[in-house]
Length: 321
Ligand SMILES: C[S@@+](CC[C@H](N)C(=O)[O-])C[C@H]1O[C@@H](n2cnc3c(N)ncnc32)[C@H](O)[C@@H]1O
Image (cartoon, rainbow, N blue to C red; front, side):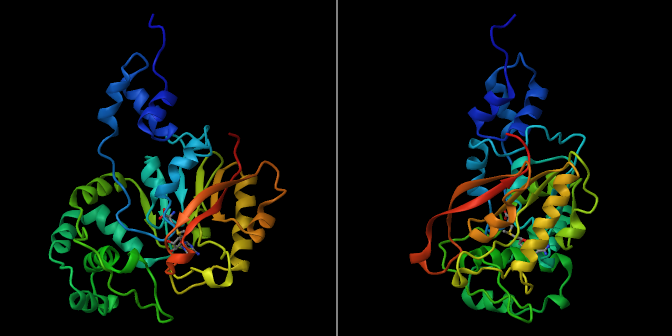
């Protein structure tokens, strides 16, 4: 008998991965395996293919270290993962569940996910033709997406995201993309290895362009839902709700809280991010079994560099840790 057998927590700690993923690796190598054997199941992993305002990539380690994510009892084999405000999908790409529904109201983003899923090689060919140049950028930006194929929309979307200012997605009232050219040294427009990895993990995943309420309609007890809406603004000037032409203000935040309560009653594991504001605290306080946690977050979406810096945000969960 070995004195100590390999555990999922030791794999998670050493390789800095989530516990669910670590459990899958442990199943593959067995409890008598060596910790070094885990390595070959871990690399290389896909990562978000777009820079996205409010992306959660830098916060995941904190979520894990605080024991807030993923929910211990969520079983990714029998149950479903839902991410209805998927954006860049940092949590999905960290969790890598086999069964998932991803959705976003941003039509071009969802077209891009589906083109990567279904037609990644042609997309790579098109992406390689783009050049990093101001007047070329403006020409691509001025294209009317209604005249483009899905493949061309995806190629334009990734190009503008990699070369536009700060990777922002911002549209005017007519829904036209209006982010200025970004100043980079040699931006990577086509990360072909990553795009192929993303394509591979999306194969059995549903990606829809719907309002979040529609997207999670079929959620059942035991499913895990991550809600990462546009944040309630910290101050009137810090408002950043321009992922689409639609707004996400008080009324929308209250509707989302009501849905959180419904999912909680229905036995789903729910994790929700939002700003650390009195309004959001008041919405989620006093709900039985719900815990409001502060997370340290530095944000770079405010264009005034003086107002960037360390601020908190909230991670609200309804499961035991
Ligand atoms: C904070 S971002 C999500 C960031 C994401 N977690 C990441 O890691 O990149 C919020 C997303 O919600 C989407 N969104 C806004 N209103 C929505 C709605 N009513 N239904 C679904 N998605 C919506 C936006 O397009 C945006 O991509």
